[in-house]
Length: 333
Image 1 (tube, rainbow, N blue to C red):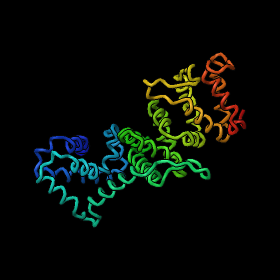
Image 2: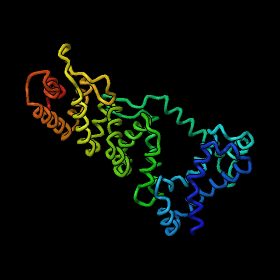
Image 3: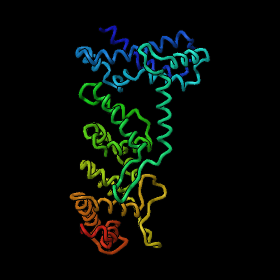
Image 4: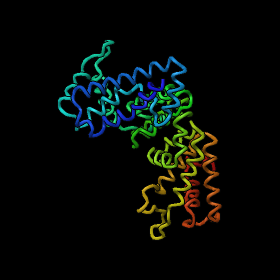
């Protein structure tokens, strides 16, 4: 057993080598051994699922870095890394391509077809606008982003099933994914998926709420109606979002010459007063208790600033005065 576990622990080294300049010394035989190891790790994943004792031992040894979840996808991860590594010699690359193009012994489709289909899907997803807002249906993701969200939820389920019941693999997966708008759009769409409640509560929400930087980027990137809908669907988001709005508002400074609140040009993580107005309006339009909570927060901040009724002294006073004349907000005044 110890020898077996020691072999499994070589997975990170194999994947790291496949992405590095070490492959310059690989010949076709070396590449063949690497591909065999990849298939071995995938088989290990299938074996430990049916053997509780082996699964427990693997979980203890591979609990860090999401290694347990990588076992199942090792051939895919290895193949992609080697295909994209320009240091791989020509002879080894030809051996790799032959191996990927040939169908497996079990009659499954060639692995290259799987890689090509996934890469093409990723490229397509990047070409389509991610979010849309309809007067009839409200905020919703476009079909490609909904597909991404479903794929993300599926991956989270696989990782959660593969690491026992602690969800460590699912959390590690989120940390390994590249940061960018695509990830946050997929997370937002997943949080609104009707069948994604378990994964959203268990993994996506803790991931967002556990890191202030994640949450700030997420909320700033999404349109105001989207964040408001998410607060209605997941009440755990409301208080952190209101605190974030408070922090953004505190960074605004009043320009007496133009009679408006402005952001500091040197700050990249703030929002404009106009955007603050839109975000608060969207919260007020959500069902209770979302709207009341937003108004309570703004009035509290106004009171902290001295509770003045004169414009230009507190951004919260000015927002309340503006919102008080808005027909869409009068229902909660």
